[in-house]
Length: 116
Image (cartoon, rainbow, N blue to C red; front, side, top):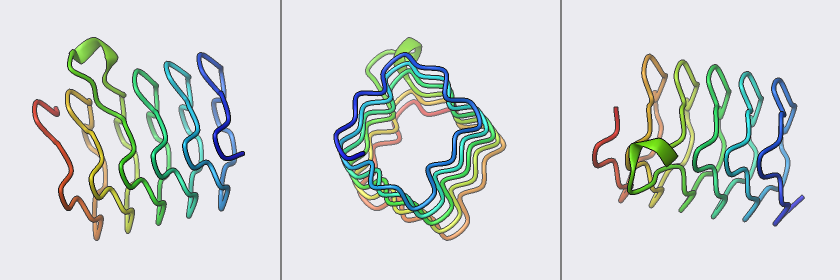
């Protein structure tokens, strides 16, 4: 599924565990409650998506684009689980990430300006 075009889809509760989603585009998709455990989301586009209660446990999100220059296009990640996830170099500008778990997550060089 690397490079898959998954824009503006309803994928609530989808199971993407261990999937190779390198460069996939989830722009403005609803992935509420989806499971991305140990998935490869390197360079993926998640801008404007809904990821409430999603699990990214151990996922690779290196250079993933979740954020945007305006709050309207930032991903919504409330109550998401990023335990042990790699967010190195990820764009998290203007994302909404409340009551989420970031235990042991790597945020090296991630852009978190205006994240809420």
